[in-house]
Length: 108
Image (cartoon, rainbow, N blue to C red; front, side, top):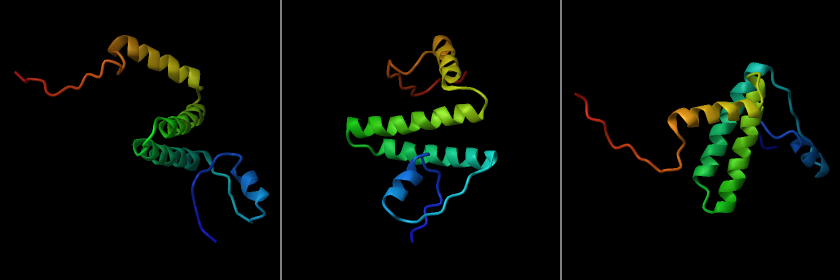
């Protein structure tokens, strides 16, 4: 029996049950849940970074967005609040659309 020991989407137990396989799960306390969400972000970011097609990249970005929804909830907000803060930062400092790559800044 393989051990996964990782956070999975809410319907994964149903998917596994439909295959007739047995499995074990546990529910995480808030601190452990946040820790696992953060680990999952790195996992999905790695998968995005190694995506070799736009379709695969979009799938991985969707996974990251789902994690952002979950993380915003555990921090007492929802994704609209995160987006509001994103928009404020974009207004003050800009976004990343112009592809500007800072090489150096001269110290005086």
